[in-house]
Image 1 (cartoon, rainbow, N blue to C red):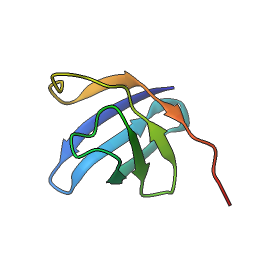
Image 2 (cartoon, helix red, strand yellow):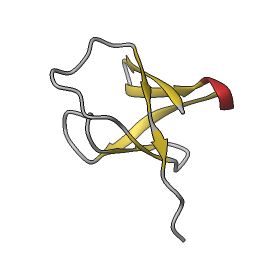
Image 3 (cartoon, helix red, strand yellow):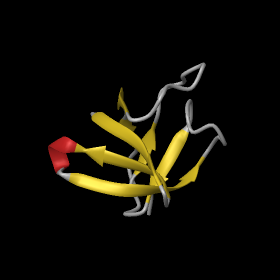
Length: 70
């Protein structure tokens, strides 16, 4: 799914247009954000692509949502 990653005064934010979802990124696998998973405030976990060097924000990326484990 296409996700727009941007930076706000509160931190990184993800926007999924197809779901009309805008949430803060509250936890990441890597400090640089790219190339690992990112947990959104609503509980979704997205796999983000590796990018070196890190792109200028905002940027649209192809991300994959992980299945929720109970």
